[in-house]
Length: 332
Image 1: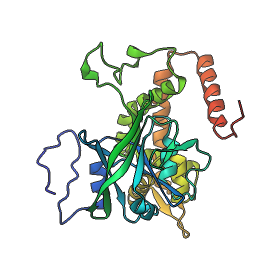
Image 2 (image 1 turned 135 degrees about the vertical axis):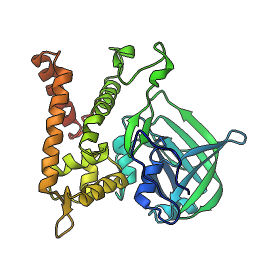
Image 3 (image 1 turned 90 degrees about the vertical axis):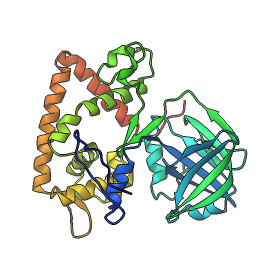
């Protein structure tokens, strides 16, 4: 790897070569490449396994081949190594929690899921954007990973918007604003394609995306990226929690949350107590208050044209909606 020659006039340069490669910075560099989010499943001798992966890629149309890679230290590695098949699930925008479940160390990741069995015997999870069922064509040594190449035996595509992962955070796909007024859903012009009959959850995801990206300038003014911002507020609201508990609260993959924690600790905004639990320092709490003040001003600016009663009505609805996700689902 060689240092890039781009002047990077619009951003800070982070570079490394083979002699000075930093694992976290290299992972962040790779994070500039946007990917989908998949769950890969397999089964061997009655044991079902599944992992979250964004290393999935198409390889060939003739013959139909796909590939992905699995870390050798993964707890599921032996089952995937012995299995003759695997299934790829392309996640939809409402499946962040599912992505996090299969990225965690939870013992029974399939608990409570609606699923079936694929043509080759792999577990098939329902409700995704697409499924691709494969038999293992070949395996390739890839350093600390093994590369699995699969021959596609069956695929299904569903009309669901796929989940995206880029720069260490989940995102949704949107048309680029330079495509033209009749083709775009511009990030700064969400009115262009609004439809009152669109699925509510899709509108909620879209509004979250637009709001979070609109606040980016305010975060950067305080020297934070979006992942660090989530962790900062997560620790302020839940002091003295473990890294695993924090990951579940801030809706970030474990590696991304760990990177954000490391940055905050290095900058003096957070620390670990004597038993390894995380807590914000006085500096971190102060920074959080500054960000909160910026957020309040940002919110006031965008909500100024709406009546307070209408804002309160939406707030009450969202509070009730969020609370329902913590309740047992009632039979229909």
